[in-house]
Length: 386
Ligand code: MG
Image 1 (tube, rainbow, N blue to C red):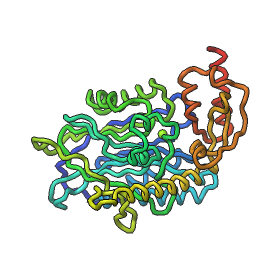
Image 2 (image 1 turned 90 degrees about the vertical axis):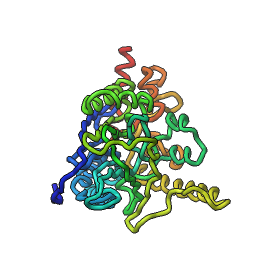
Image 3 (image 1 turned 30 degrees about the horizontal axis):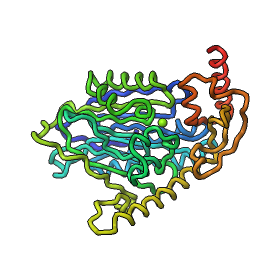
Image 4 (image 1 turned 45 degrees about the horizontal axis):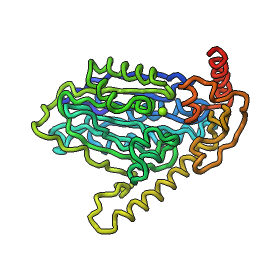
């Protein structure tokens, strides 16, 4: 652990509870979660061999070490440090080449009044792990997903309902460990006593809808809430690793009466300063169309970048004309890179139980060919037993 600044007295106290589970399909839990009294982090790693596990662990530790306050900029810097740490670790070890991770975090920072003023909560995000806020008005998603389907929703090409079940919903447009200077989104929010923040990997919201998440978040102490959310996501399918961190504002200002301001747009930043990644409201006639076109081009470039990096070492299980098969490459390759058929043809997808069949049809990322073969042997044994 690195040096931490000496703390002045805080008026804000956060209570946190977390839980994580490998799920029912994967061999390895590549998610990671970490907390201090003032910072709370969830990461979802990806990459062959031990890459995914290492990337998420390196990133979480780097953010907790690097966040020394006092403001939102410090948290963004810590995420940038984490990106560098993942890249350096990958460069130093051939087995870890190409690993990456999502990351979202929440931290106590000085509010708009600066030191001595009121405290605020800073939120950062890169990738498709999520930060939600739950209060008396219900559940709202604070972070924006950096995924292909989320970009298509923002462009009006998909509905949120279509995106939630889209087979390519695991394609990321941003992550840590992919480029030297990624764009990092951040927000600053006013805390109110009783608010709960939920940080989670996609293994949660790909299994449970927001309505069910809202019911569970509201009910019980934070540690129990975290365990229950994870248990229910695993029971609902557990197709992926599931990680949940629930943070409650235990001591802090009363919520002001009246309607709460909506969660604002992210501030997207590179290290050189602010970037204009997010289309602001289109005041200028004609500006809206150009912004969307520009952002789709940027999305396509980012997807090619991400998929290009990951397609070299990925393996996945999918369906080849109704047969369970192993492919080299990333499932994202169906859009931009042709995945290569490796083996298969002796187990029909139709023989699998419902949950496994759905997972295979949506493709299952695995770290190695051996892992793919082990999983398929398990499917075969289950199918024979069933
Ligand atoms: Mg995941």
